[in-house]
Image 1: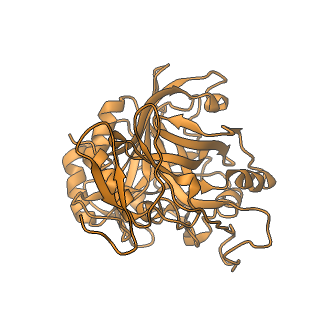
Image 2 (image 1 turned 90 degrees about the horizontal axis):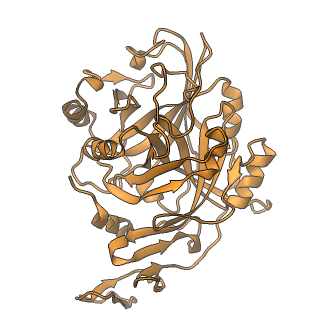
Image 3 (image 1 turned 135 degrees about the vertical axis):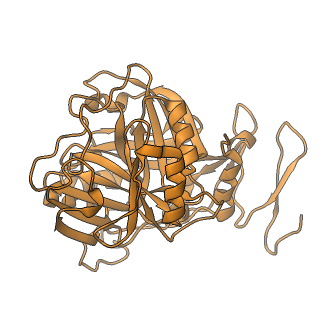
Length: 420
């Protein structure tokens, strides 16, 4: 292998031959892990600050006069609770190209006791994503009880996550692909959003609703018509109260669309003839670090039913029953984020207080509720597997908040792809 100017050749040796060689720029530190030889990639640290603000203001890029040091990088994943884990994982691989796994484990979930009637449940969880770009799914299946669906068809304006938005390069190509897999669970024709974008909706085998929209921010192209998650729709009862959290604290402060009335792209859905206020948000200053190159820009759509009060999607049910269980955000600076949330009345409902393990992935997790009890997870990633079978892991905690992961490292995730 040729030698790059200013770089070193890094030699990684395991207990199998031949020896792997790679050229890394910039060169990270490598460490061995036990019980089997593994290497942990690290890079230099740097400090990054962020100001979370409301749309229309012009805050400084850095809060140099503030003691708070945290960043909401953007959405990280959507929790999708299912009735048949393996069937859903295969369905998501075929339909959405979600074929890169980060972990798959069965563990107790004591942090969710407040939303499981005080009883600790056991669940299987698998984090999967599409390497072309977009956020991940955390696919869930209750292990200690039999999950049940909602007792009604969840409608726009119901409280909680009512739809997940998936990205595509070509809406026509993706629509044909979706029809071939989802069949009657997919819209037969394309619709149009109030802001003029072509779109269609479909449901997974458990009745969870997905919306498909075109996007132009991509990490790579492997030929699959779908990308990963680009956003979600959340029903709220009081738009102003919801904006205090999603815009003021979580930084989704740029309003792309705000209108009240009937919604043509919801024809055929329950209560479609009623009036809704619908606000589409994104971050005016999205985080540039971590997995930002891969996840791309993310969106939150808040919907308030005007003619009725929406029902909570987990009414008379618990977390890990069938549905969109939670929305996860990628964050840095968990302690300072907690202080900011607490000052706004959205303090952590529970906190791991330290790193927890999900397979070989190490994270710090906290949970909050929005004003209507939609469950939100804050995740500070410490360690993720890059090529687990080679023992190659990344220590994310040692990277600066604005440092993106090298493209070669993200592309290396393809070696863990699951093929059907």
